[in-house]
Length: 121
Image (cartoon, rainbow, N blue to C red; front, side, top):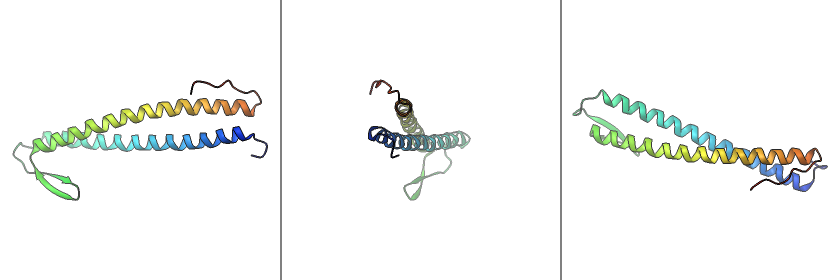
């Protein structure tokens, strides 16, 4: 690191930070996608349950009896909300990936001795 110019050292630190952000976004997206799959499976399972059957749902740390209709509405709302979050995370991931690749290219260029022209920020 001694022979690396301070600007490039700063860019390397930014690159590491960006990589961590990218990993966090990918991890969150995966968790949301898993939760969506579980909620969809619950909706599918509820399709076989009679309308007047006792259905229970966790509300915080308490399990409460709810109507099938209420549980389905809650699950569908949860799925919709999580799908929006996943879309948002996908946009973040794409933007971070683009910036990551751009910065990587600039660093490689600087280390090879040929400075890359700065791209759009």
